[in-house]
Length: 88
Image (cartoon, rainbow, N blue to C red; front, side):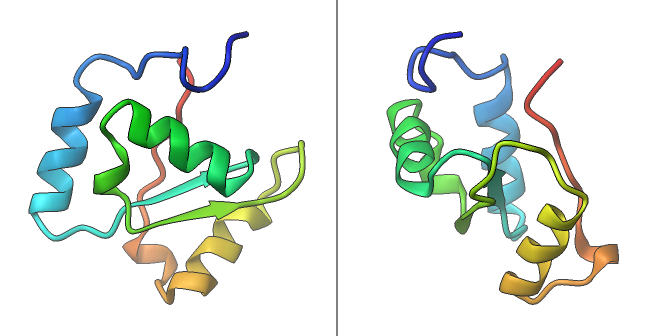
């Protein structure tokens, strides 16, 4: 796989993020990548402005606790979260 900057976002992602952001939703990016690396890639694709924060899990394996850590950091409850993945 290429770098994050080489991987193009799915079609329509920018429109959806823009609509969600304009509607007042807080958007967070949760990733196993380092936050600065992810921020650079989001900015490169014109998506960084839509996110209120980036949570780096700091490990290579998915964990059920990753979403809980992000929720706690930003003070939201489970019923206020919608997770949208980045793979097909």
